[in-house]
Amino acid sequence: MSKTPSIGEGTISRRTLLKAGGAAALVTGLPAIARADTSTMVYGYVDWSDALAITYVGTKLIQDNFGIKVQTLQAQPAVVYAAMQTGKVDVFSNSYMQGLGPLKGVYEGGQADYVKRVASSIDIVGVSEGPMTQGLAVPDYVTVDSIEQLNDNAAKFPDGIIGIDPGSGLMQSADKTVKAYGLKLNLVEGSEAAMEAAFERAYARKQWVVVTTWQPLPMWTRYKMRYLEDPKQSMMAEPYYCFHAVRKDLKTNLPKAYDFFAKFHLPNDEEAKIMGWIDKGMSPEDAAAKWIDGAKGKGIIEPWLT
Image (tube, rainbow, N blue to C red; front, side, top):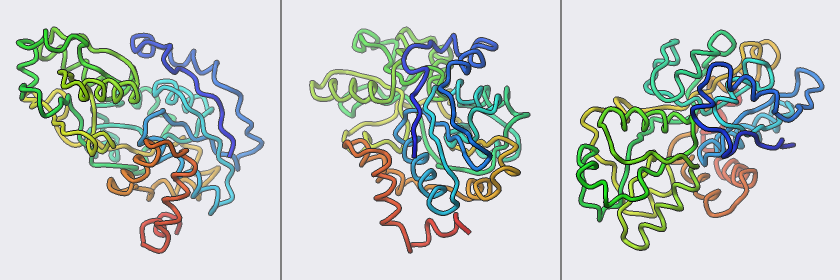
């Protein structure tokens, strides 16, 4: 499996990505795809541990069972969607939205704005993971219980609210939360890895820290932590799911792949195993292969391939 370089990592602000046409313009900077014919599938992903798990399990199963060459491409969410619209990406398995409405063409929360912009070019064919929860979280030793209490304790959180990738669905919810509660804390953009590292440093020193996060993530098994109560439900009104978004022509060009994505749903507990291995340093390819070898014959994989 060949892997193209990433684009958009840490250099593009959320504001830039959301400008009309901004993401589309960035697509011209994507690496060239060696698509010899329609038997090659380009699989877009974001550098999140759950996205790595889903994408690389899907990649190996498709290549090994359907004889389809898969090329992975890493970029920020807005760029992935724009690339799907222009035909440079075929599939994205981390289309993150609230509730199951996307299966019926109703898009809310998370990446819904991106999906609406390219809806005429893609299909949402199935659930890749979930249900999931998200919110603002603190270590258990922090004596704040609700988002409403953050302003009264703002001085104890000098680093603000530690976030993840700009333009992610989680950060869009966090931005709405800052506005809904009139929070004085700055929302700091970064990455999943940077957020976890900041939490780990603060935790080791028993310092106060608040982060944007979701479950399942391996950090929930390593630390005693909890979500802050969210009475306005601005972070989450109902569970979130990730969906398989595919280009409309995938059904014609690669029907076996299209059918696979309609059934490919990685259970949370199984996904957590893969994420944990990656988090400890295993390559996504090796983690995916290890999980597939262990899951064979257990009735998890087999229904996806029929």
